[in-house]
Amino acid sequence: MFNTTDIVVRDNLAAMISTYNQALAEVEDAYSILEQAQNKLRTAFIDGKGYSFNTIERNNHGDVGKAASDKIKESVKKSAWTHVIERMSLRRMLSIKRRDELDKQIDKGELPELTIENVVALFTTSAENVNTYLQEAIHEVFEFLRPHRSQHKTNTEFELGKKVVLTWMVQEGYGKKPFRVNYHRDKYLTALDNVFAMIDGKQPVKTYHGELYDAICNTEDGTGKTQYFKFRCYKNGNLHIEFLRPELVEKLNAVAGGNRLKQ
Image (tube, rainbow, N blue to C red; front, top):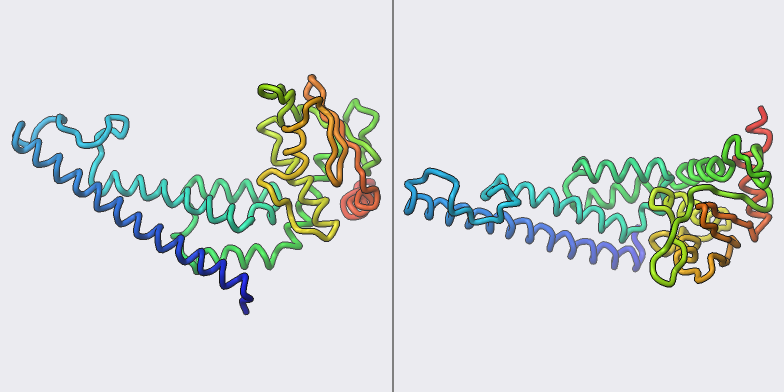
C-alpha cells in the first residue's frame, strides 16, 4: 500500500510519462510533415528523382518520415529511462555489476516501453532484492579494497586494516582543483560510499557519485575527510584512504573477508 510520498512520486511519474508520450507523438508528426515537404519539393523541381531538397540536416543522412522519427523516439526513450532511473535512485541500490548490466540494457534499447507499470515493476523488483544487491556490493567493494599481490604493505589480502592504498584512482584536476577521480574508477568510490552507508544503517549516497568522490574533486591540496574516510591524493595516481569507523570495517571483514578467503 502506498503512503503519501508514494502517491506524490506516482503523480510526478504519471505527469512525466504523459509528457513523454505526447512528445513522441509530436516528433512523429513533425517528421511526417518534413517528409511531405521534401516529397513536394522533389516532385516540383526534379520529378521526384535525386537527393536534393533534403528537409533535415545532412548529418542525419537526409532521413525523414517514420524511419527518422523512430530513431529519434528510440533515443528519447533511452534518455527518459536514464532520467527516471536516476530520479528513483535505483543505481544506488545496485551492485557495480548489476548497475553496468542496467546501463547496457538502456544503451541497447532493451528496456520495455516507458510506462508507470514498467517503472513500478522495475523498482519493486529492485527493492525486493536490495539485501541481495547489498551482499554483492559488499563483496565487490572488499575485493576492490584488497588488491591482489599489491606491493603496498598497507594492503592486506584477507581482511582490511586501518588504511588502504588504491592505485590509478586519481589524476590531474582542472583549474584550482589539483585532483579529480579517474573516469574509469569513479563507480568503485561510489560503491564504497554506498556500502559503508548501508552497513551503517543509513540510506545510499545522496549525490550522484557520493561524498568521497565529491570531496576528492573539491580538495584544494589533495587531502580531505568525509564521515567515513580520510584521504590523500598523489600525483602518481594513488589514493590513500584511512577508515574512520573501525566498527564498520569489522562488519565488512566479517561478511567478506577473514576465514572465508583463507578457506
